[in-house]
Length: 92
Image (cartoon, rainbow, N blue to C red; front, side, top):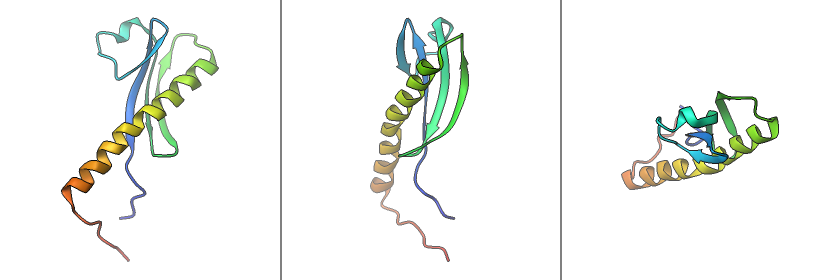
């Protein structure tokens, strides 16, 4: 099965004016923005969530911040793949 690489995901919320990655569930009621963002190394593939009357520019800032931060999730997946040492099967 063709696979173009790992996908990572993080939750981003804005709490007291500060963007927070993967906040605790107890912190979410204090947020005015709450999104789950998934993406590949170079693209955002999914955004889900909502906000409380937040300007579009601030929503975009949160989404791009989340994409930058989800790169560490992708890095961990690639490290795990190397540690396992299993070669990818070739399909025709």
